[in-house]
Length: 313
Image 1 (cartoon, one colour):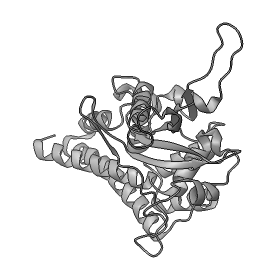
Image 2 (image 1 turned 120 degrees about the vertical axis):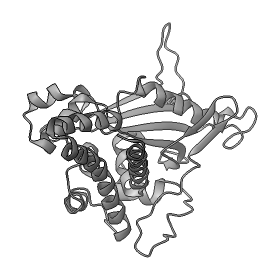
Image 3 (image 1 turned 180 degrees about the horizontal axis):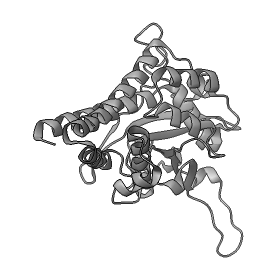
């Protein structure tokens, strides 16, 4: 691609990423995500989580800008600065409360939408780093000096949209656990279970695990489902209110995703089928990264047999 085309592609990708973050910030979507991942919410309804536990004092959710807007979290500042460690930009970060026997416990939760799974480093390590930053950033805000008892649990949830085949339709949790090496001493779990990373790896239908949150996310971020079909799935299967505002944002996300594809298709028309496929593969390697997902895209877009598509990647 020439320089102008590169600028356009980068702009489209950035706009698509921003649209994904806006969709993820909807309380109803977040409620499904944290109920599916965090034990603290297993016995809560989606409505209860969205209305009662996500951000105890939301600054925007209770006063929508548009009359029919679905409540969206205001969230914590997504920019985490440190003069020593540099700046981390979170996709979505917010406070939440969780029910308990006594006073509800507080959590700080980060949700990331990840298009490219193979990044040159293990994503789980990045998730642990994000959790570590969210823990250390509480000094001076959640607790002062040595008041470590006030530290809130942190969770980083990674929505992997194009994982490798072996990870499709899986949810994996990484956390701190107590292990007795000698004897049988015990601490309260709430005093050490302060860090959890979740890898939510989306896959397609035809798998027994393709239900619940994995089905929801696959439909929501699908590159082939039209907005109207997404709306029907979200409403009928997950009881999510598709307001005009939310429906517009989902449609915008779909259009931006389609724009990335159309750029590759335009290359195909200009350069011929074989060169066009090569150009599309090159662009998708930057945008998606996973060979299996790219091959599946070629099957859908060009009607290639699966084996032939794999040979092109």
